[in-house]
Length: 117
Image (cartoon, rainbow, N blue to C red; front, side):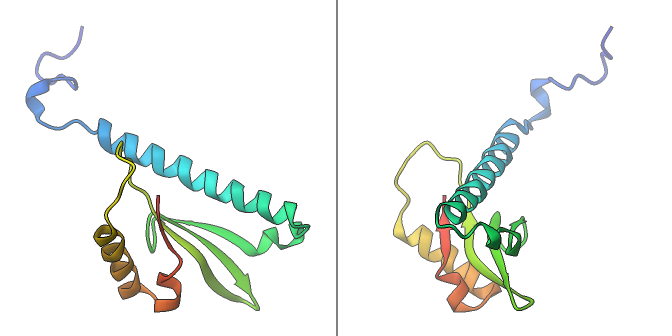
């Protein structure tokens, strides 16, 4: 018999993490998709030997980033912010704000590679 003092599904608790979990799930699937797309692109261009130089960075600079290593130096190829939204249009002001936020954390050159998923 469930504990009557605390019911995890009690609507009176006022918090349900379903939306957060769904967003993280979508974010992870998007990161995997972009990483697999990059791997496929490298193989398709007969550059499969370069794959070990690429890394998927999660939850650091943004939601995820694709990084490549050249001569021991790590470089951002793309920086991704993921939003799980039903609408397909995102205002340019939103994109500009994200780029400004990223440029505060890294060089302007890297901020140009910002992607809003």
